[in-house]
Image 1 (cartoon, rainbow, N blue to C red):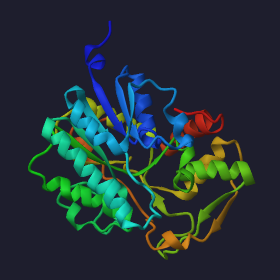
Image 2: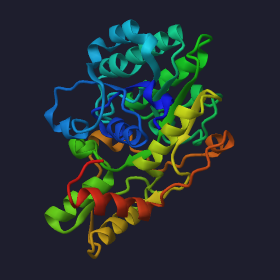
Image 3: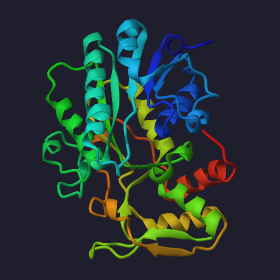
Image 4: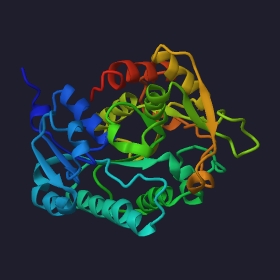
Length: 330
């Protein structure tokens, strides 16, 4: 017998052609949700395999989405606003103001007006160099100092959100840490280190990692909180069903791992011995490079999210063996 909740739940996903958005389509399809509205710039053919074979109701170009949402708000049960300009090497502030800040405010206001639950993607880039720690308290947000315009745009929206007296019926902002996993073939330079490593090993038999330009860290011992995209999907799906405790939350694992360990796990998943070479960090990102990130996950755990996370070894192994090596999508 079909579930009436799933049959009558129209869900919107912005950024649906991208990495995290397309994985969300797969997760919702696998859970029986078919009435999906996909929003993005669908002009890029290299993103088409991310969504084209999935089940959805309609594709909406992002430039007309606000108009569409106003006209169809009575049918929409939830908005996942995942779409954003995510290039950390882009320094044109106007681009981020338009796509990440003003666009997000517009969607927030429409969801507020019509009482539509709204979940959006923030970023661990908001934490900058980590001088204020990695705790997702609203009190800390105004003090954060992101290292690039992308992080600034995400933090400016977070700051704007927590000041709002009028809000959607439920809302959540998720600070994604270093997400990796299937469907990032199109991302090029911005793809995860696991993807880059696998590609380099295939092409050259070895992996290049950045030298450390910080005396506190040895080469390859820069630390990041890597989270498998399937764990991110678990969090997003949980918030679809648990519409209490509106707020901004970290989405990481709470464990910081070195890039050397990540590279070694990648070689292992490819059944190869490790061969690592160090290169200088590109000048255009060197001054804004994060040497350490680690999500404090106590806030999300405190509201009832208790699913375990993939270890780095298990996540890398699943990603490489089941997606990258056979060239498959999720």
